[in-house]
Image 1: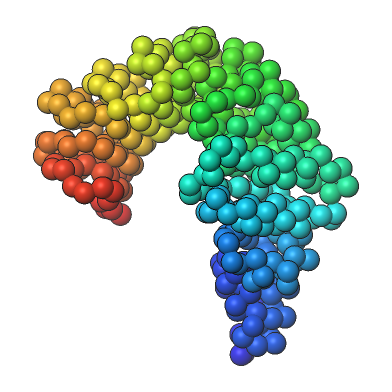
Image 2: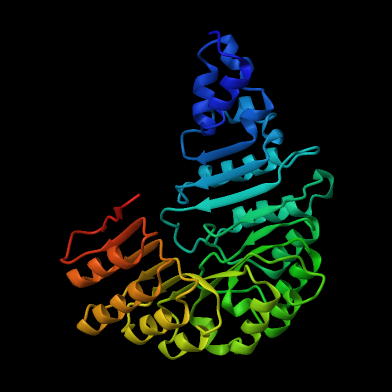
Length: 372
């Protein structure tokens, strides 16, 4: 009971909302500490059926103090869980709110024919509420698997001109965010340094916006590549060369989805792409792509994920990756590999800290090995 309030507040800040509610019931001192601003700097709210009355009603007035908010909906089939997520968002964005970072994560089984309309409407309503004074610096919608519209993304950029990072590469079946919208986002948010989008939302005009002389250094570009990319023009290697020269510290993370036609793989993976993380989730024969990564991304590649078929040729290509890409920190191959592959990565990659390399089949899910 002699703990200073600041120490208790720091401890409570690590608790999700419902655990804060439980802690507040222990004694009067703990209950009073819950109103300390540092408790609410980062807050995760898990919206689960049956938890509606635990904390939300008591703490709804304090949610406006949250600076970094994560809303997790793990039971999308439960309408009450989805409604709770919308209420939390509304409470956190009232007038004089402090919110600067927002992450929405929706997992679990979807109801039949459900497209996230209620959650999307809640987000849109918040963005259109001019009285809230909302201005975000970080937005992460990667785990909100509903089709985003041009209107929503444009509203987000218009309301948050000081945006630093934006992730809208949420791996849905359809991409409705056009290159024109992404270009408007970059123009409206001159401080944006991290962007996650579908490859289909890129164009030469979008990258030209990043090449402008007055643009501050750009740090990270995440690209999700899927079936619609077969209809779009690929970005030329010359443009990637220009982008690397303009932003020397730029890193690119690329995910190739299994719906992407195989003939597009090496058209998207240009030699001058500064690829830091590469995920080839295609379930196809990937020997050529692995060899290409070893030669083209030897100076930048830090993470490699493969879902492919075992073969001696793949083993040889992976040994080549280990020998060329000394900066690798993670490698995960979801097919059986040889002992030579494992030895090669352990020998040639001193920064490797975890890997999934199995020399014989195991039960799903495969667990990774931690080194550091």
